[in-house]
Length: 119
Image 1 (cartoon, rainbow, N blue to C red):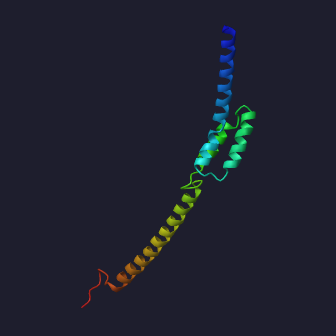
Image 2 (spheres, helix red, strand yellow):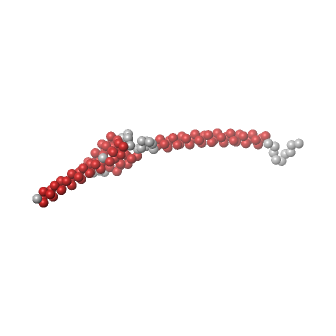
């Protein structure tokens, strides 16, 4: 009787481990699906490939799935927008500086020099 209990326990443990390994390999796909990742199908297929290669690819799939966020994409668009805004602001500052220089030059040419006296 004890042999059957041990056999049942071994089968149960084997099934739990098998299911656990399959569930763990699917985590990057679930992350990608939750984030509406554009490559979620590729991540899912690569997860199955990783399952057959003893999860060698799994950490890279996890990183790949977590890099994308729906609100900012890959993160590069936000950087490009910020750089464009900074370029516009820099151009505005240059134009304002030129206007100020022209104004200062006009005021200096209109004002008498300190050494000369106008009578």
